[in-house]
Amino acid sequence: MTGPSWNSNNNTLMRIIAGKAGRIAIKVPSSVARPTTDFVRQAIFSILGERVENARVLDLFAGSGAIGLEALSRGAASCVFVDEHRQACAIITENLSKARLDGGRVVKAEAISFLKRDAASYDLILADPPYWKYHGDKDHVGSLLQSGLLAPRLAPGGWFIAEISANQTSPAADGFTLTDRREYGGSAILFYLSNPGLQSVPPRQQQH
Image (cartoon, rainbow, N blue to C red; front, side, top):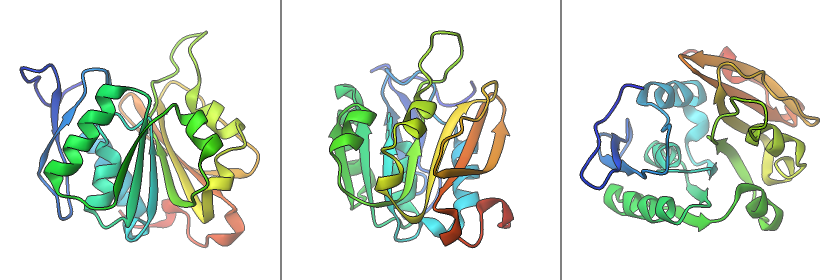
């Protein structure tokens, strides 16, 4: 992928795109093989629009925290960053401090394990796990949707937004409606709505 160069610590440098921390450089841990590009992040937040303001956000497979940091920068009330890698959690904490963003909390945990013990409610749950590419690879997004653990954590009308390989079929699950799929190069962004009767305007109807 095109993008930032590598620094001496073998961590990629990226930037928060917009909002109160816009243009601040952040680190990406070397364990993250495929950070979400600026173009894709911009597309996600353009589609979400005002839904981000004052939202309670959960960033699963957080990596650098770039998606959750973008949400906080654009006015989200809070964001819980979850990643099972110690290096990622340390870098997210560093990025939060550098960006001077309030409302962030970093949790070292595997995503499903975290959801099993979490009791909070979120307006947006974001997930950018390793891609499913080959037979035998774990389908993280499918596992999340089929776990039965996402819907109880979403507030009424809440959204689950996931990134998968553009070559992968969109996973389906009871209790969720796939309202939109957007493809950008090798990536596909999926927008799932929980409790669809409580949300009047799906993202695809917004201007962006």
